[in-house]
Length: 167
Image (cartoon, rainbow, N blue to C red):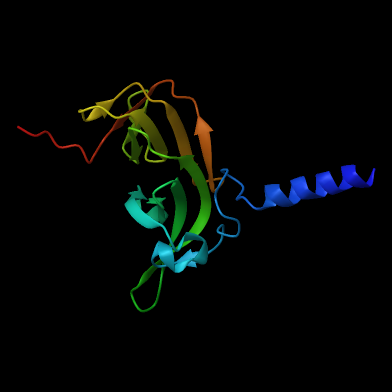
């Protein structure tokens, strides 16, 4: 009985070492405020790959894609305007989407049933193109719940805003 209790306690402690939304997101990041992501001890080895404001801008939400070379994490941030004009960010949710193996991640440039939805994040197998219709995974950065939620890929299309045709 004691062994069973110890196993349950260890399982609970291990589960608490990850953030709520995604596995392998360091504990204690939700609610943290930062200016540069590597200021936070949990992300000292990470660098920002991309950031995007979720429209309308006055909503004060944005997405950040960060990596340590092994993991790619999407952060849902609330923008905090400081009196000195500096902008800080408060992490409201985070999800580890794993290693980007030949995938393109598109943030704030997706549509659901042909209607733009800036909360959508899409992942697709990389191809030399701008528009993606066959997505592998899709999430919603839900500003009402402050959660990044996985949703169905049905009816989702995304634009790779970083794509540039070369001659």
